[in-house]
Image (cartoon, each protein chain N blue to C red):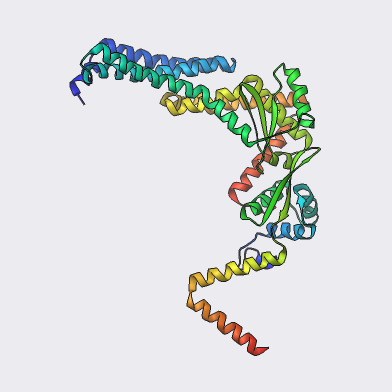
Length: 259
Length: 122
């Protein structure tokens, strides 16, 4: 590697100014993300992706600069090729952020069994999705003894419920869980959560920024719990559902099942 | 099945696993809530505990399960893969094989002496 070539980049006030501005924009995007915590998931996603883009830009800028200087005789051709490689990497990264949720949704759906429209739970979901003014999610069952439920909203909304959940929860508790998931679908929380996980892998700032992590996710969870409690007129069912799910997970993990 | 519980030297089944199998064998197949209803009459037990135990037995290959559609959604129906005698036989086979694997000719000699003495006594 040409040390002088690297130094030329780092000693240039203009270039370092661009790098600093880009990192500053990256941090600013995270700060805005904190301020707009009550905004829609789409709005928050825009700032999340902006953060990742601003963080990646200096590295691509450096690559373009180095490519031009060291590897090709004609600078304009080198710039074009390196810029193409860099931009392709960036576009690929952004597409991955956007497409990963779609791929995951299809993977879950392939492994799951649809619950018929005539089932009590499909009717329940249909009734409450109309009240929420959202597109009716399809309900799928996962062949797993572990009680769990989650929702996915990419292209079309889906709710996944494990067989184990039907086993250990009562009727009102299952309704509470479905209301909780409908709330997530309304706020498009699943898109945000998945993108957040990807952003944390790509950007150290996002990892360090606790407000972009578990706090944001737990606020979504509290909001969904509150929605279920409001509809049912009590938090008893959502609380007992969560207690049973936690109890199962603890017993399965520790292997201690004495009673 | 008490003979195979932990603490007896065999460590094959926990007390709750043993109780679940004792309830499951006569019935042939059962759902989680049905087993829970039977077991709670005999001892203090939570529904989640019964569900965990059945899943554990399924992972061990002791029971199998199928999915059944009901009014309240989907349910597992569990059934033992072997009857009591077959299960006990498999435990004995596994234990003997482990002893021979670990102690080799010493174990084989012991079994020979034991069975020869046993035949001699009768």
